[in-house]
Image 1: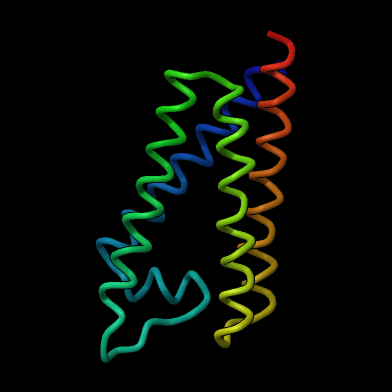
Image 2: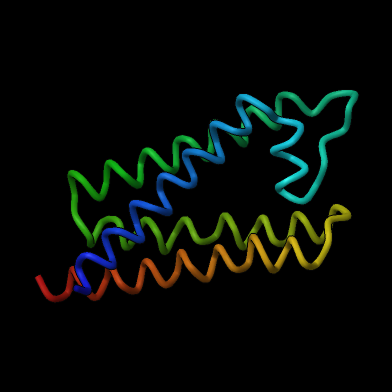
Length: 127
C-alpha cells in the first residue's frame, strides 16, 4: 500500500508539472495569471517560455528517475525540487501576488512534494 501511494503521488506530481510547463509554452498569459503574477502585456515571453521549459523538463526528469532509477533517486529529486515551489512562494509575495496564491498554491505544493519525498524515502529504505 505504501509503495503504491508513494509511486502514485510521485507520478501525479511529475505529470502535473509537465502539464504546467506545457501550459506556459502554449498559453503563457493565462498560465502566468494562474501562477499568481500576471505577465506584462509588453513582453515577458522569453521568461514565460523559460518557465515552461523548466517545468516540463523537471516533470519529465522526475518520471524518468522513477522509471529507470527507482524510488530512492526520485526521493532525492523531490527533496531538491521542493525548492522550486518554495521559491515560487517568495516570487509571488515579492511581486504583488496574493498571500492566498503564494501559500495556497505554491507553499502547499512544496509541502506535498516534501510528503512525496518522505514516502519515497520510506519505500526505498524498505527495499
